[in-house]
Length: 365
Ligand code: BGC
Image (cartoon, rainbow, N blue to C red; front, side, top):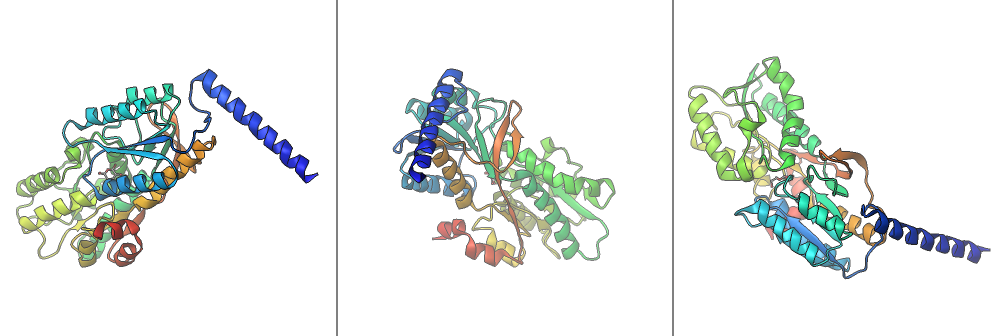
């Protein structure tokens, strides 16, 4: 009895696999996975090394994909001429017959040709951390919930200023965002502005420079030097004799540059302004413990890589990869999405997050 049941299931399974393989071939859409063998090439294209998360992701992808039996081809876009260099790295992965491309796009809008070619070859495309925009050829998106990251940053800025300047009725702030080529930059900024805009409108918050439009706040290439220069200019032009209470910084690399500028201008006395961040970088955790940087967002890279690799394994087995969130509109299609939850870190939980975060431990070794 039992034997018969198992056989029936097995036959049904084989029939299903044959069907899905067939539909993948005839439709050419690449949406029904036919599976692929262990030892297959998995291409991982990462944008640059401006933040620790990317540095660590490269190492973890190499280790975890290799452990799972695949051939990992992990590439970083070089810092010069990056968008086109990344595109050609991905074209080479296609030529090598990569079965899945995991892409952290340098420029979310510049990879349309490469992901189309991947689909023509029957490969799957997973957008990693950053969505790939304006293309129908993106199968999955795996990331930390970026809008939530922005909301946590906006709320941390408000809460931090209330705690640090208990007598103030209004607060002077400045706003920073990331690179315009990174679709996450606008999502972080919009998430933060959901919290901050009503307070700007009711006069609780004053952006002294008047620079509230995202285009005015961008940091080309997510480069620390660009944020530091802008902060220097903002302070020199707007803050002589005026207290600065807080700065919305989208990540830790930029937060440390902004803090350097604040200290150089003597705006850290008598009270250090509240500066937010993201990524829980090893260099920022000690600053959070001492209060120099107010907050960061922990997005444990090992968990995100683990999830992306789990998706690859599911695809290899001919299954759909799991998703857990509403699909993400990339301007062309709705991309099935798996989100992880970001976590706010302040002085209260910095030590614990440092101790429990393998990402940080690995980097400080
Ligand atoms: C990532 C952040 C990172 C930034 C700069 C964003 O897309 O989500 O974690 O700080 O890029 O590298």
